[in-house]
Image 1: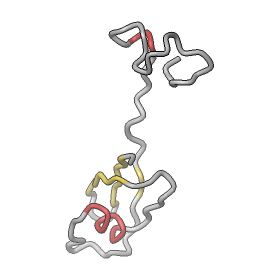
Image 2: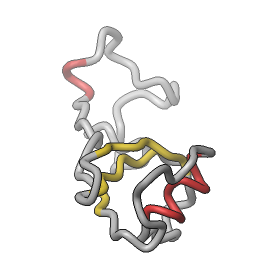
Image 3: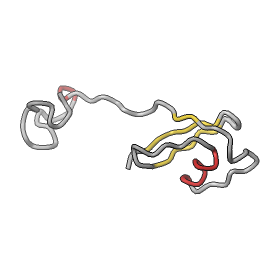
Length: 83
């Protein structure tokens, strides 16, 4: 499951959680429930924003081995996403 970072402007906390790609987290209460933490003094209804984190792009030329981990040789047609 992908990992996402969310920031709550009401308390300026950043929390990392795992959830399905199509799930949408909109409030501090939802975020705390996913993370297994207490809401504390922040209202559960306080909005949160997902941060644009991660997603580093790796090209096959920057990898140590010339053969991609899928073992299929040079990536044809973008099958392994490394070209």
